[in-house]
Amino acid sequence: VAGLSRILSNIYAFDMFMYNVDRHFGNYLSVGDAGGRRLYGFDYSRALFWTWPFAGFPQSGQNTRRYGARLWSLHGFDQTAAFTILDQLNSLNTAMIEGFVNQLPAIWMPDKLKDSFLHWWNHDREARIIALREGIANGQLL
Image (cartoon, rainbow, N blue to C red; front, side, top):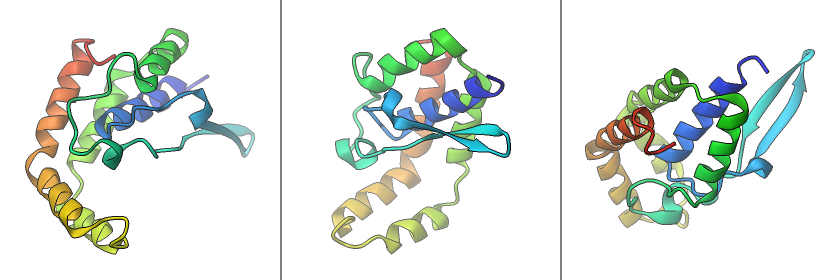
C-alpha cells in the first residue's frame, strides 16, 4: 500500500517518544476517504503518564515493539519518516505545550505532574529525541 510504511513509521516513532507500551493491531483504524483509505493510530491510554517519569523506551517484549517488528517485516520501516515526526515533536513551541497542559482539568493534571512534565519538556525532551533517533538508526529500538 503506497505510503503505509511512512504512516506506520510515524506512529511507531511517536509511540516510542510517548512511551506507549501497548500499540497492537487492534489500535489501528482504516477508513475510506474519497476512494482511498486513511489509517489512524488510536488508544494512547498506556502512554505518557502511564509510566511517568519515563525510564528509557518501551522494551522489546512489549506490544509496541513486538507488533512494530511484525509490521516492518510486512511493510518496511521508513527511517526518514520516523525522524521527521521526531523533528516535528522537537520543534513544538513550549508556549503551545504549556497552553495545552494548562487547559487540562486539575484532576487529570495535578500541579505537581504539570510542573514535572513542563520541566521535562523544557529540559529533557531534546535528549529523549536524540536517544530515540540513535536507537532507531542503529536498530536497537526497532
